[in-house]
Figure: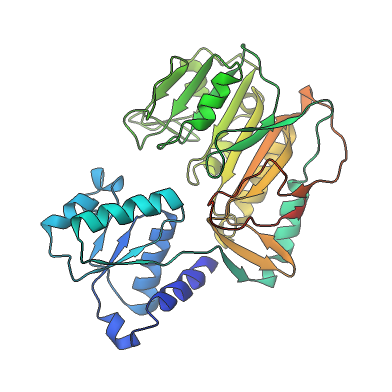
Length: 362
């Protein structure tokens, strides 16, 4: 994985004040255990032969007995540990650091990710060119764009084309319902919301319908993960051609799209995704096949690079590790050939304190 080298450099920079032999002997904990946390573990284990003394993640500690929560730190001898904080979401970063300091005032916390990481790799040129070809955006005639959701992380750009007959589907909620609130404020009567990592919504609205279920290409045996077909059937929406989708599910989007029938995808008039792991070599074929499939029924109208990920520089161009894309149904709209430079004026950096990633013309 290319981002192993990027994380490796950040870890080395974080420990630059200590001799290598010294920090190899440190008691290192990793927090949290998302995509960057997993990569940090790989770097420590594989590159330096260091076994972390703890993995800290408030969410995953509920499901995995080998992972502890921040509150559990007070039960173990952790004062002499160095905690590698690797979240790229500013609000999460601050909250975790405050929680750790309350439990362990003397713990040393090092945020190894402070700026967008860019790794040069000219070998990605062919993949980058194919990706841009498949994600060539078009402007929609006679319709304006609108930002749905809050500024910074959590907002997406859609067409300003909503009616009370629309049902919205949102996958990946966490602690933010700004997108869903904007949808109901724009006239959408019902928003069906799904997230297996939370037990309840952070805010109530009569138009919200929440289920602690994840999305997948097929139903799991325990029904904790369901296909879109099963979910639409539950809501009597299998024949509803007036649906809007928002999905941020940490990589599960690839399995969902590739294993969902086109007639199901065709039910959605608009779809916004955050796509993950774009720079992974192992994921290249999946990425290209996914966008080929989406292009059968939909057309991309907006792209935005999430500035919290690890990015690849190819000459003067940037291939983002995390990319937000909105598609609209080809059958319902007419398209122009206006040149669009990204980011656009409606965009906002996912991490407020970091600069936007210039994608240029797509």
